[in-house]
Length: 267
Image (cartoon, rainbow, N blue to C red; front, side, top):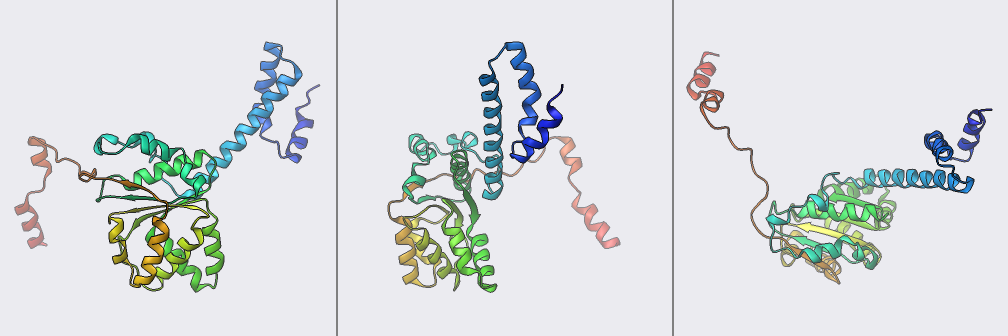
């Protein structure tokens, strides 16, 4: 007698329908290997745990808004030979998340700040943390929208509870009022309660220039610097334009300026 038709509704009722995906294969394995009943059940439970963990990881990854390929394994340390790899490896353990400490990543344009920040996000995701990767502009736009709908306090508390938030490109655009107030509120709520990574093209000593209110600047930056891990990147931008093709074929592929000009005149 085939028990599968009877098992399916019961497994669904117990929210174990994923067991059906591996039940047949595990049953065949148990018969061929003459496994004990307890070993067979253990394999099914392990499969279910692995499925749930993967599903949770996928959900956290989607919510984090991080790029899937910006991992530490794909970070090119050769472009930044002065980086202390042991220091980055220590950050990759996510000890800073446990400590609820900030991480400040600063350096010129194109030196890998965003990639490194997202790589640390991936490390945190793998360890089961909820993470949000966003830019200064997007974050403040969301908080502004919450103000407009009288949902600011709820949004602030929602953001404050996320174990790790990355604020990318801080200082790329000067803050306006009440943006500086919103950022201060968030940093103050998260201070000593959750970890925040900030990336910026500006050195930390230059961050005050991004604030219209210097008192808010001092209060916000002081909290971000307190107990922070700092990563300084240097060098030229890693972003390169595609090289122009060489040879006769390239010359024929490039448009003739005279031909283009004549064509426009004729039109």
